[in-house]
Length: 112
Length: 114
Image (tube, rainbow over all chains, first blue to last red; front, side, top):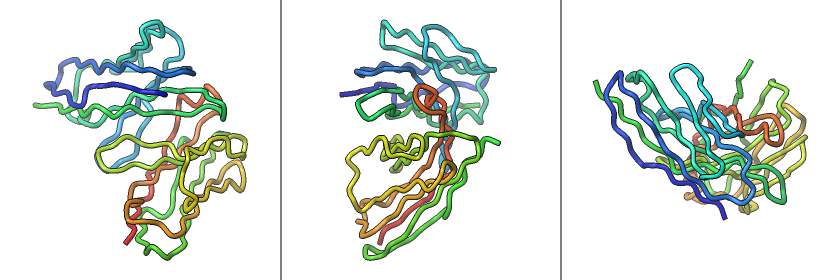
């Protein structure tokens, strides 16, 4: 089966840096995505790592280590609007084709 | 244009009703998805369509019936639902295969079954 683990909650101060970790177990791993979801909204794509290493997009960076089955999302220069839920999601291939399995989500609270 | 649209935004239906949810995208994506999301939970995959063919059904009860009339449209037909089916139903689209790591979600339909 597949499983993903990420912290349930993280609190940080405006302007700080926060890292949200994700570990996964899956049989047909292809890549790791990150999504942001504000309360009442839909998930928004942030990043996708299929290869080991760090991908940077503005204030957000994402890292993947396939050998460690581990990834993280790094948010820099935190702003109040970054308060949201963040989901890691595994892109997995099984008999039927490709599918995406979401972790339980990390709720980020940014304080002034 | 990276927009996925869904209608209706809200839907209240009785357990004996039949209704449909609609989803549309014009990004040229050939993979489309239905997810169900309960409050404070992650999206849960229901169905995957790849090139207009159903490729994955995550053991969803038959009271949910998906349909992909063409490469831009995805429907979810609902019949004889239960109150526990009340949730946010999200549609998403992406490139096929490994490219599906980057999915675009619609705003969702908030469904209440009475």
